[in-house]
Image 1 (cartoon, rainbow, N blue to C red):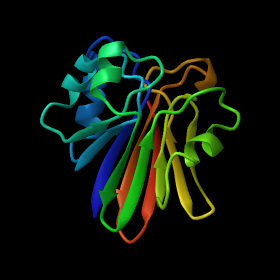
Image 2: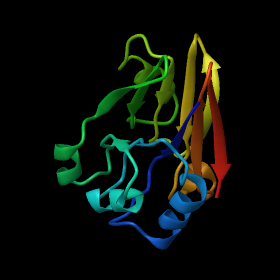
Image 3: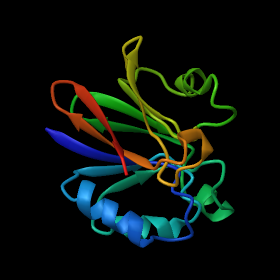
Length: 160
């Protein structure tokens, strides 16, 4: 079994005490952390010190982040292929747009909309942890996520 911590839309200039507490409480036994973009600055990744982190760039990231991180990644976890992307445009139709960025994946992790998503459609598990930073689209509620990989992929949204 594999546990993956998932976070998106931190919108920070660096690690803060809220992020550090979340990492300690929810991601301490995670095998891997996925950050689905809009870190804003690379220093945010300091909060995950000692953890394996795979991150992608988002639309609100600095030019430094956009130069250092890819727009999308494919991660192999067990027998599953996970696509990781931030997303773009309006929240309506986001899942469809990001789906076309990948071929033959089992799970699609994305961010951008600040809306938590955890469902399956057409053989793909769609997972958006919502937004660490909150915002109007998440009704000002912060959230993160956990994926558990076993014989299948299971997702959990955690409101913080």
